[in-house]
Image (cartoon, rainbow, N blue to C red; front, top):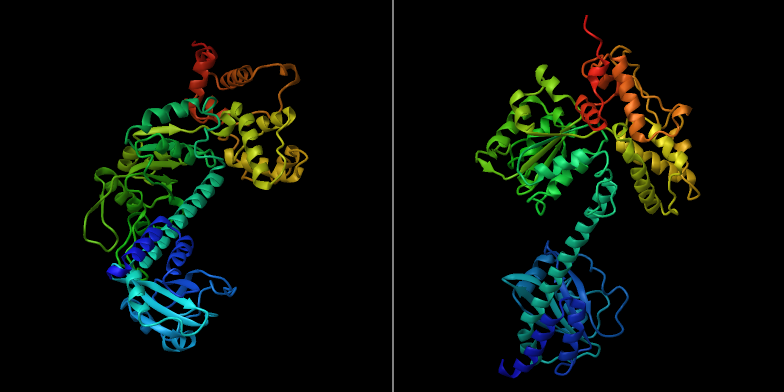
Length: 524
């Protein structure tokens, strides 16, 4: 062994200096060629199923084009895996060794061969193969030298496996990030929320207030208004920002699978439970779990959800052990949970638990000042996604967008802008066409005139053409208050007439200095 030390040291240096196997194999082959009659060095890896070897590196010239492809499954995989695990050394003509150990050599290898199994931490990882183009080049004295080289070559295989796993994980994370940003309509994770300084100012103020606490948050708002974006903003500003953020659409979970989805199950707990499975709460441990459309959960699941919110403990389906998690819950719904509590459709104790800090997210029609910036942002992103020249809405387009009531909220606005970009084909945004017809306005049942809010007119009168946005909003609020005799809430109130939340209406009245008492009828 002592006479091999200088060579062994050089091989160790090259194996540790070059992490990727293709680079380290070239360097190691150059070192070995000074002491051994080799023309090729092959490093082959045993697959996880221990059924075949695949070529990681093949140095030297005249390599067959298919040499680096995976070899076909061997006819006798068990002896091959056992041979690798035994760190055995074999020597002889390539065709003879191929018959002796099917699958050891890749297709196309000819000449004389000296090979040994690679083992690391007691596990077979592959084989090292020295090959010479001319027959009879390797002698018995070369076998101890290869045996001394098996350890650094096994480390080289392990290093390559680790770097490929890390690369795959990084690529998967980048793909997930790109998918998430595309789904959120964002270009970067640090993108600011459009409207944070406008119609969402009060929302973002409440986000900043609650983000640092671990208090449960309930986000209320219409479908498509951006509740998930607000939930992610809470998570991103919280001490849990480095932990996972998981979204669960409660309305998409089948009632019979809700227990398993949320809390996991043990192996064999029901038909088809072939393995233990962690639920959403376990996977969100240390982070934030966003329960979207929480009002869709069945009463039975509400009971179990209440328990985990109270003390952080739960049991998997079919399990007996009490498990504990540290999860911050942010819930969201477009439904009136208070009315559901009154109707017995939602548990009052769960309502009190999740409604510690409510955040009302106004509909897009309640914050028209945000529409120009949002339309511009969506237009730029649509152009990038579709590979078109960027085209922005004209002032006339912006007027049309502000006048439209947006029953689908931000989600509908994004769809309309993308449709306009496709129709314009890089020349312009065809917003009138994208908004017109039945495609932009989904059909809905005819509401009860006595209960439905009146639509805000979509065209401004000509005589008010030079009004500011605040003046338009003030005039419409005052007109609604006058029609409703100063009443704000209820089926005949101004909030219902304008189609906005009463709290939002009061906030706007305070900001605009509107005194509702002026519109109350005088007492007799």
